[in-house]
Amino acid sequence: MRSASRWYGFVGLVAAMGALACSAMMAAEPPAAPKVSTFAPASDLVFQVDYYVDRLEKAVASESEYKDTEDKVTKDANTLAVLALALGLHDQDNKYKKAAPGLIRASQKLASAKDYGSAKAGVEAVKQALASGGDPSSLKWEKVASLDALMQQVPLINSRLKRNTTSVRFKRMAKDTAGDSAAIAAIAQGSMADLEEVKKPGDAEKWFSFCAQMRDAAGAVNAAIHALDEDAAKSAMKKLNQSCDDCHAVFHPEATEKK
Image 1 (spheres, one colour):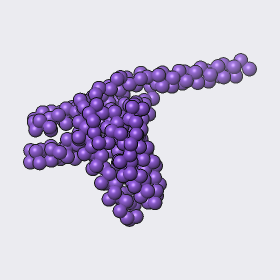
Image 2 (cartoon, rainbow, N blue to C red; image 1 turned 180 degrees about the vertical axis):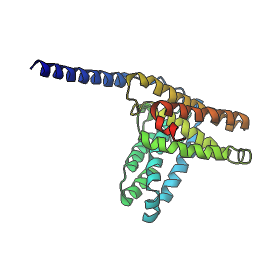
Image 3 (cartoon, rainbow, N blue to C red; image 1 turned 45 degrees about the horizontal axis):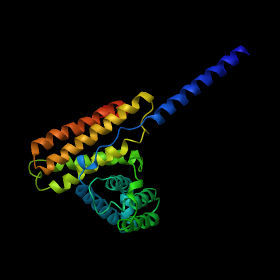
Image 4 (cartoon, rainbow, N blue to C red; image 1 turned 90 degrees about the vertical axis):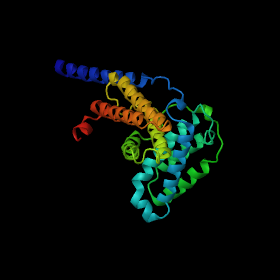
């Protein structure tokens, strides 16, 4: 009987420790966000919203097209939700600021689409939300999208950035790369409040730090592109890639090992 009591006591202690760990993670608060303009100009984010809406329209042009791009639709819809949040919270006025609450909701619904019909209707709802009006003052930096989908999107965007910031394409593709770097910065800031990857209480601060590093490095890439400073862009790209590697080393070491 004494052994049973000890066992139940041990189980209770483990459960209590687990509860404390969860409470600690829940209590962890991200640092205050800087003004969005410091890492992602509103004009670049608007450009990206239009870019992803156009891609989504093409993805649901036919059922066969949708079947070929179903995963892309999910990633793009989640990305759109974060871009909308950034525009709604932006310190610079922009044409989608008031539409942001409705655009977030429409993007989230589209992200959960499971078939062509719901995806088609979801894209139409997203297009209608672009012209909607709302009160962005109720928005805050919080989870609005799937972290997994966003982290799958980042390397795709980053690959375009690497390809288009070369000597030959640097100036010619500046508008596109400015948009892509702004999108990564917004994703980094938008992911900060999502502690899904944090399994240990002490790692919450690390997560916040890695997200901030990624955001600021992408912001530096964006600033260098606007200044047409190729050397500065290359330097900032190295920091951006390093921020990803540093984060993977802690939260996804298997991704680093595969390199």
